[in-house]
Length: 248
Image (cartoon, rainbow, N blue to C red; front, top):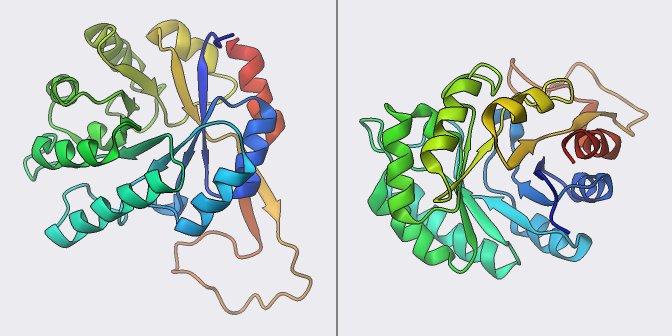
C-alpha cells in the first residue's frame, strides 16, 4: 500500500539509515558533512548501506560546501561520483548546479541526468538560490528531473510555505515538489495542509553522546565554529515514527 505522504529521511551513517527504516521512512537521502549542508558520501558508506537497509536510498552529489557554481574539475568529480553511486545501489541521485547569474545550469545538469538514468533524479535546494524559482522549475521540467527539494527560497519551509504551495500548483503532475528544511513534528501537518505536497524531507535526528571515556577537551578537531567533539547527531526512530503517525 502506498503511503499517503512519502517520508524521505536525511542520513549520514548506517546507524541513522537503520533507525530511519525502523521508524517508517520510505526513502533515504544519504550525504556527509551535514555541517556544510551535505556533501557526497563515501563509497564505503554506500556499500555498507546497500547491505544494511531494504528501503531505497538517494545519494547527494556535491563535491564541496558553499555555492553551486562548479569548476570543470569539480564537475568531473561529480560525474565520477554519479557513476560510483549508481554502481553501489543508489536508487537516485541528488544534485544542483547553477550558472553564475543564478539560473539552473541546464547543460551540465542534463549530462549528470543522462549518467544517472535509469536512477531517479532530485534537484536539491540549490533551487532556493536561483533568481526566479518559477523559471528554475520550468528548466527542471524540461530536463526531466523527477523531484525538487525546496524550502521555497527561504531559510525554512514554514517561512517559504506559500511559495512552495505555488510551486506545487505550477508543477502539477509534471514533477514532484518536496518540501525540506526546518520541518518538525509540530509543523508538518500545517505544512502539508498549505502546500498539498505528497513527499517531505526531514532529518528526525537527536544528539548521541560519545563513547569516549577519556576526553582531552583542550584540542578541537574542527574550526572555531564547530560541532561538539563528544556527541554527534543520529536519526531517532521514534521521531521518524512520529512523522509517520502524523502524516499517514
